Image 1 (cartoon, rainbow, N blue to C red):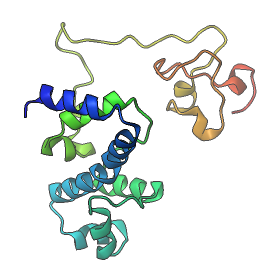
Image 2 (cartoon, one colour; image 1 turned 45 degrees about the vertical axis):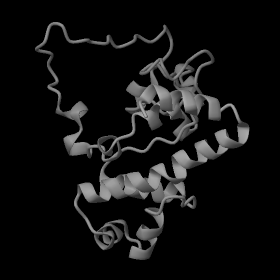
Image 3 (cartoon, rainbow, N blue to C red; image 1 turned 90 degrees about the horizontal axis):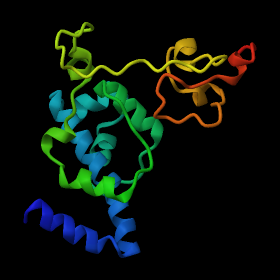
Image 4 (cartoon, rainbow, N blue to C red; image 1 turned 90 degrees about the vertical axis):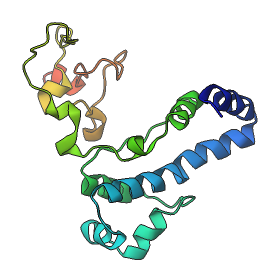
Length: 186
């Protein structure tokens, strides 16, 4: 079946709340085990080798690679992200984003590159292509110190910092630390 036909069938099926809930659960309980296996095979490691790298038993690796497994802890996923040298994203998304992800699923999309092979970090720090898109660094508002400049990253909530009202995550590099803006210590 072509992608448009699958998309229409999913659109119709997802109008049912029970189906929608099962679809959302399956994206995690089936998707994560498949991705763990694809990442393990990318190395290429056996289950025992992954277990050794992650400090767990081979039987546990077998369990977390089993489609339908739902007992993942964030701690385990963080550990696996570290072992595979990749990032981990856990967030709520619109159902439509899950559908698009499902429709574009491939072996390549499961076995993402590790840090050393990540195209983002392979780019030259100097722009040689005059047609390349260059995003200007947003300038902070007067009296506001960007968190990313102060702490080296833009996740103030991890350290208990508050974000100035009106700031959004899209305003990368402009997170504001109220304590710093007020002249205090973060």
